[in-house]
Image (cartoon, rainbow, N blue to C red; front, side, top):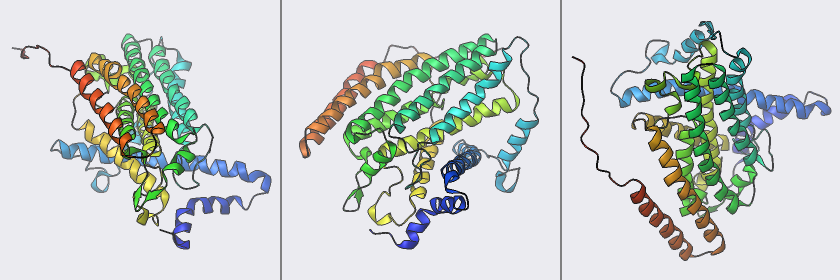
Length: 396
C-alpha cells in the first residue's frame, strides 16, 4: 500500500526536524550537529521509557499478585519514578574504607555508557539510525560484552567477598548466555548476508499479499527467536535468571556495597539493556520498523518499532511475575546442555534452509530436525529424577 505525502512526513518527522534545526548552521558543522541531536534523542527517549516502565512493571506485578502497585505519588502513582530519582540523588553515597575508590566509581558509568552505545546502531525507524554501520551487529555485541567488565569491576573493587562471589557467578551466567545470543544472531547473518542492521530490516520489509517476510515466521527463525529471548532474559538478569542479585543468597550480588545514585545507575543500566536487547530482537526477527501487514504501512515506522519493543517489555514483566528463580546449577545446565546445543543445530538447519531452495521440502526437513532435537535432548537433559518429598521445618 502506497503511503500518502502526509503519512510520509509523519513517518520522517524526526528526520525532518533534525534537518531543519541543523539547516541554520554552516555546512561544515551540520554532520556533527546532527549526531549531537541524535545522541540527545537517545539519552532522553529511552530513560523516559525506563521511568514509565518501572511504573507499569510495579502495577502489572501488583495486578498479577493481587495487590496494589504505586498509587500514592501523583495521579495513579505515575510520579513514583520522580520520587525514586530524588531519593537516589539525596541518599548518602557510602564507599567501603578498603574499596578501590576509582574503580568503584567507574564501574556503574562503564555499564551505562556501553548500554547507550548499543542504541547508536539500532534502526528505530525508516532512516532513523544514529550510526548506520556495515558492521552494526558486531558493534552492538562488542558493546554488550563490556557489561561483564563493569560487573567484575563492581564486585572486585568493593573488597567484599559477597560482592566478588556475586560478580563471579554473574559473569559466568552472562558469558554462558552471551554465546547463545551470538549464535542466535549468526543464523540471521547467514540468511541476510550482512552485518548491517539496516540491511537486515530491509531484507524483511517485503510482503506476500499482506503478510510480511519476517524471519520469525520460518522454523529456524522461530527457534533462534526463542533462544534469543531466553538468552536476553539471562543477560539482563531478569527473573528467572536473576541470580547475580539473589539477595536471599548473597545479600545483593555484585553491587552489595553500592548506595545512592551509583546503585540507581546499575538499576537504570539493567532496564536500558532490556530495551536494547528487545530492540535487537525486534530488528533481527520481527522486521524492525516494518509493519506487520502491508495495509498498515501508513502508520509511522517508529511507532511499529517502539510498539514491538514494549511488547517485549511486557513479556519480561509477565515472566517475572510468573516464574520462580532458578538455582545456579539449573541455570548453567540449561545454558550448556540444552540451549547452546540447540543453537548449534539451528545453524545447521539455517544452512539447509539456505541451500535447499524454495519449496515445501525445506519446511518439513527444518521443522523435523528442530522438533526431534528438542524432544530427544530435552528428555535426556531434564528427565525426572528420583527426588524425595520436600520437608519444611519451622522455628519453635
